[in-house]
Image (cartoon, rainbow, N blue to C red):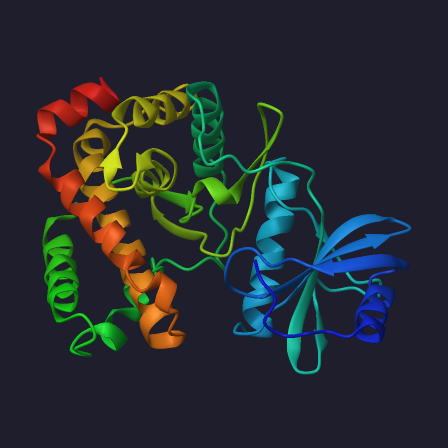
Length: 312
């Protein structure tokens, strides 16, 4: 989360009033990338205000509907606060605005095996929920940006690599794998812990109807890797936690390594677009290559070793 649209105090107080909140104090939330976010301290409690700078009202409404569904099923994630006049969001100066309850918790970049098992179990519970008809059937994260990055001659080696990898993935990814409601972006900074107990999996904005095992692949990339190396014992802990709730099919086990590679490549694609095409940020110019090298490292692991270390 970050701040892209600066809201003034009177604007934040006006928005708060639309949600029945009396603002005591507020502060911008600078971490992450995406929308404009503020932490609100109110007489009614602490909340997060999100203004969707690059998303439509329809998108924000669908996200709100998803959060309500997850609350109904008691999935540990962000809780939506509806406006006092009804609906799920409001529009302020042409942009959708959402308010969510603030979750007390910490992000841990170094997750131990017990924490990873909790995350894996929560992912499995998510995958067993009914898939709402308003959730997209397409995985757009990263790959949606592919046409805008190839042949730009910013990093020709990478641009050729990612285009070739996308073609290979289209040919190699099994089409018959089980699908369900997946988060799509479970990195360590989208998981909150209260001490060592899982508090929430947040940022459901990439949720889609896709391969369940893809979520595990993205989770391994986002929580079980150090630079360009997969920590297989951590990946095993995540998968073991998942299998406590939902057993993997044989086809999912065999495809998991490829899905990890696919996930790393998709993140590299997004990073290249974000830091070279959308907004040039010199200090992050090579972040896409970190994920490129990780994808190559994953591909280099003998499949029998990967399966034995992670899925046996």
